[in-house]
Each structure stands twice: as structure tokens, then as C-alpha cells.
Image 1 (cartoon, one colour):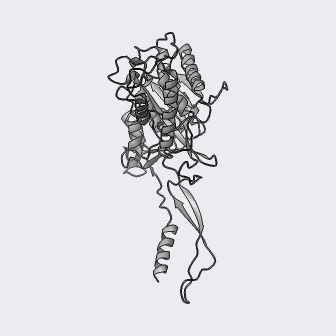
Image 2: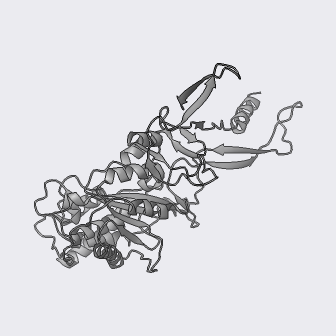
Image 3: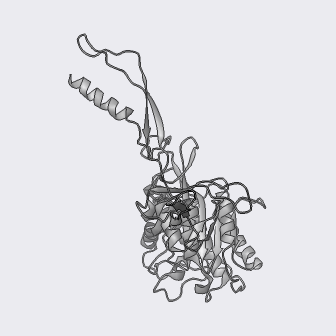
Length: 321
Length: 111
């Protein structure tokens, strides 16, 4: 597992990919949220529909370890540009960034002409990259490439004592040793004798230390690895700056890629059907959302986390108006 | 009496050993069977080496996906390679019939 990332990178680098036309990057778009009757309601709807809690901890995941993006499949200058943009956006919204030159990549951004073949190979060799799944049918579903740019999230659960466990099924379970009282025969009823030790195996179980509080159990979800795969042939009409911003958003927050146009101006509308003029860069809404994700309490309930994001976004967007 | 029965039931449950199912082994797994069951391919000789690679174990669904795409896993188990043409893969040949002096007939079967 230790070398999986490197091998995955090599696999991806080996993919046959053409260079994508590079154009001058555009600065972040400053979009004032006007023309929306009820911004609070729109924000609540946006957060409710876009956020994805993790399967294991039921929390919203974010980066805890410094991000280290790696881009492949483009010309060197475009590779540098996309990687830098992801790093810059991360720094801008308060996500941790790994500044070491030779850091171990945990965000892999791959441009390939054969995205489905790539994800088929990932399903065979590195299924953890697809994210949590219980069985092969779910893995196959996850591996389907639907969007011109698509992301996959492998998450981990951090418990109260800082133990980190990558979210995946098919664990070997855990043994639990118990001292069991044994009844002896004879006499008037049960007698307890010297305790034999009984070991039982609980498949799929994992040990997690929690607080027991209803407000927050002390458990949080982190990103372990994020893969973003893009198909250049479907992206010829877009500027590299726009694509880099879209990728940055996907790389920093686990999001549902919308299948209909969102009311709030967001770069996530880029590939949403029915959007006539989607933003060409990250908007104030996007930045407010990402900042809020990296400000929220990691250990509170998902409901609490969504509430915090909505509060922060409302505050940020009303300050911009 | 009732307590003893409950206790016995609990003990029976706890001490029941996990039925460890050893994975199936095939020289050329084709992905048939339970998609969530594991099938292992025995070690294959590494190219240009006297050594063999590792045993490669994958889910049947993963073997099936490889076969669907005309692919296989390399002998070292580290990468995906194009599948060798049928007839050269997993062919197992035996001499049948005949004696030491009369010879016999070579019968080959794919595994």
C-alpha cells in the first residue's frame, strides 16, 4: 500500500495523452450575488445539495494533511500552471499545502484521451482510489466516467485519539479478547470459576475512539487521496484557467457534480446542462464555500457542519454585496 | 437451566471460528463466479529471470474486467499488460496413451 501512490502515478503518466491548448489564465471572477431573491435560501440549497458526507464517519471531509498536487498529461507549462493554481486556491481558502518540492502526491490530476480505460485499470490495481465501496458492483459504478472532468475521493477517519484509518470495506476485522465466566456443574446454580479467555473475530469491525457526546463524537473525515481525471477532447472549448479553477474546486472539497444549473453562480455549473453562461473562474460563492469548509468544526455532526458552512457563506457573501 | 442454555449459546457464538475460505486458484482466471470472491493466479516466471513473480490475487470482477478489455496482469503483479493470444496462455499439455516404446499422443488443454 505504501508505494501504491507512486505506482498509480506511473500508471497514469504512462497514459497516452495529448497536450491541451494553453491559454492565458484569468483571475478569479468577482461575481456579486444579485438577482437572487433569497440568497440565504439559495446558499442553504447549494450546501444541502453539493456536500457529500463520508460513508464511514458521516462527516464532510477536507484536507488535513498538506496537499501535494501532481498533474500529468499536458505540456510542461500547462502542468505547472494547473498544479500551481490548485496550490494557490488551497492557500487562499485555508487548506493546508505541502510546500516541499518532492512531496508525495495526494492529489493526482490526469488528462487522458482514454479516461474509462484508465479508471478500469484503477479499479483492478488501486480500487481504494475510487473511494469507499462495499462490493464490486459499487466499485464498477464508482469507476464509470460520466463527466469531462471527474473526481474520486478516498477518505480516512480520524478518531478522538488521532488514529487515522482509511475508509474501505473488506477490512480483516478485529479480534476481541474477553474474559468469560464459566459455569461449573453441580451445586445449586451457577458458579463462576477462573476465567478462560475467549477471542472472537468481528469481521468488518474497526476500533474508533469517540467522545460519546451528541454534539460531536470527536471523529472527523479527511481526504486520503483525490484523483481528478480529465478528457482533453471534450475540453477544447474551455480555457486552461477555467479548467484549473474547476479542478481546484473538485480537489479541495468532495462535491456532487451538478446535473442541472445551480442558482448561485458557481464554477460547478461549467458542465451542468442548461447553464447558458457558466462562470469562467472561481466565483465569490465558490471561494466562500471552500473557505467555510476549511473553517467548519471537523468533529461536529454533518448537520452542524452544513449549518456552519451556510453561516460562513451568508456572512461572506453579504459582506461582498 | 435457562441461564445455562443462554450462556452456552453465547459461548458457542463467540467461539465459533471464522470459516476462513481459501481463495480459488486458477492459472488463467477468467472472472467467472461470484464477482466478490477472490481468485489467485499462481506465480509465473518473470521474463529474463530465473525467478517467479508473486501469486496474484484479485476479485473475480477485476479479472472479468481485465478479460473484457483484453488485458492481463504482468508476472511481477505490478502492471496491466495486453492479454496474450489465446492458445499460448495457460496451456497445459500431457502425453496420454501409449507406452514407453510406443509413444503417445500430446493432449493440450487451456487452464
